[in-house]
Image (cartoon, rainbow, N blue to C red; front, side, top):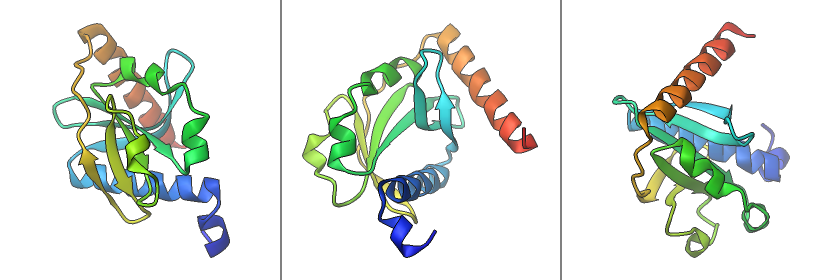
Length: 143
């Protein structure tokens, strides 16, 4: 990524996703980007813990990106924990208390506020986990 594209909205989003996935991996979670959900939404980052807990991280590249997004509550029913991933410059007080807060850059990140834990029902957990696994396998195979 060149210097100019790193500061565009898509460039910032890509850097956030990379830093978030690196931070999650450091914590033992495996991640997939751009995961379609059964409700028609698409999670920016979905991750699984070693014990099968599902996390979703919605990345926000700037305040404008956050302000126009009223769909974030739709992700909560597909994860045990929901976070926003933002840059250090993003005003952290804008992030709702119902969500965790991750600050990241292209190299890593940190959880500044844990997400409330909302355990998925068994049937939903199975469906989400199978969808995650199938998507990861399809991407790994190059299809």
